[in-house]
Amino acid sequence: MRFVLYISEYLIPLVFIYIVGFGLISKVPLFDEFIEGAKDGFKVVFSIMPTLIGLMVAVGILRASGALDFLTMIITPVTNILKFPSEIVPIALMRTVSSSATTGLVLDLFKTYGPDSLIGRMTSIMMGCTETIFYTLSVYFLAINIRKTRYTITGALLANLAGIVFSVYITYSLFG
Amino acid sequence: MLNYLWAYMIIIGIIVGAFTGNMPEVTQAAIDSSKDAVQLCITLVGVIAMWTGLMRIAEKAGIIRALTRKMRPILRFLFPDIPDNHPAKKYIATNMIANMLGLGWAATPPGLKAMEKLQELNPNKEVASNAMCTFLIINISSVQLLPINIIAYRSQYGSANPAEIIGPALLATMVSTLVGVIFAKLMLRRKKV
Image (cartoon, each protein chain N blue to C red):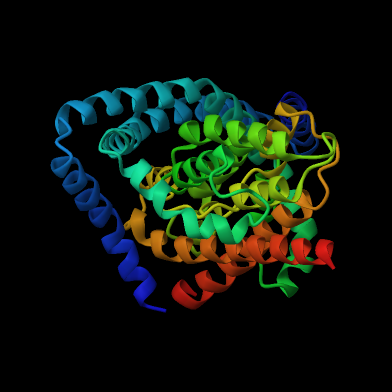
């Protein structure tokens, strides 16, 4: 399993080499395009800032009031059997509904437990393999007026669940 | 959806806070969280701008186009119902590649185009076709090459090695996509029998 950690070290540099090399060969004005793209990055981040403020405030209130701890306490007996940290349950549930609200919860968790804790690492890995099912489905199906979605939701939920289960497994086997 | 979610998070938080006597903490959390959010965005700008800059080069250099061409055999396997030269396949491929590279905003337009084209092939306009179901399951479980946002968040909150989760996350996303594909394939087969 150790090779997975090598991937972590090499993937970003490899992507850099590949894109810059490809850009050189196809004679793109590399640096100019990079600057143009980076400007978009500013727009992206500042356009999500108000959303993030709103949601982090809501999660902050929820955490400080003790409501999140209460929820965690209730589900701990069940999640203990599954070796699933109960602190992550709200994230796994929220993930299917709203991407930005999930981000609020994840950041709260990083702040409380640290990104390098077992919980922090598990959450990080989980975020890399799950998606906001219901939001995506409604956007795509509403666009073409489909009413019967048949097995799409089951399939998407199953895929997300597999990702969650595997995240738990790999976190324990690499960092446990 | 988010309107209700947000409202209930705040209302429940305040009610619970009143019962547990955590009101001063609730007030403090509201103020601190808004500051945290701004601070986070400022750190985030660096990483995200680096990534969008790099991806702009990738787009202009034709990497997305090149990768899209390489998708053909995979698409033939996943979507046996779509004719080979149908435009839906091109849009699906572009959507998948953009998703893989973490270009969410670049993935949605071709994704919606793909759905339109699939709707043209669909005999029953109110019911999702097999191709639509397969496409959306894969779209949702799509392989993410680099979870750039998470890496940025991790570094903001003091991780010693923010990128260490890339490898395990890559494996996990492959597992979830594989499960999605297998499920979609099973449903296709069941339909035919």
